[in-house]
Length: 219
Image (tube, rainbow, N blue to C red; front, side, top):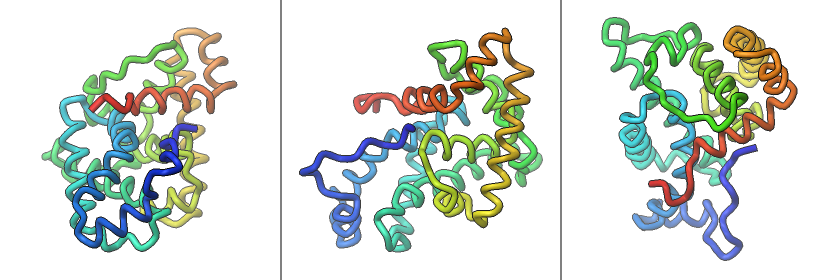
């Protein structure tokens, strides 16, 4: 899976940084966000145009500062950040769809909301197929699959991120997998690529997630 690598053994934990940040140590907050930079970049990169990524990450950081006292358990910090990122994404789509600001993310896809705006370069045909298929299914299906495959989040953590019951996450994951398979079947340029992607879906998903996060120097 593609979740952020653990910090070095001698590095302060998320819990230490969060406690220091709450106590007024701004540098601890910056360290905490730097540690999870790739997480947020990966989250936005396959959902919006490249010109919006930095602003949406900044908006997420600002919102997390304003409500940091709500985080009572440092082990939930990633879920906390991703929940703010999800709401930031929803607001972005609302701003982009001024005629209908209440966008139904259970119905519309990234490709419908921002056609041609996402320009992620895939290294293989399988990765290209997977990324295109994800952008062609409803946004909430795309989100739940990426949280599952890229961030290795369990059902209860995904429920925290999306603010829905765990049972809803389980049913949404099932529907999302069916939708993704149908999209790949429709978009595949060859049966060979389709079968390769489907039979090794977790491997291809992990590779995509890793590459979408960029390198630690890619700031």
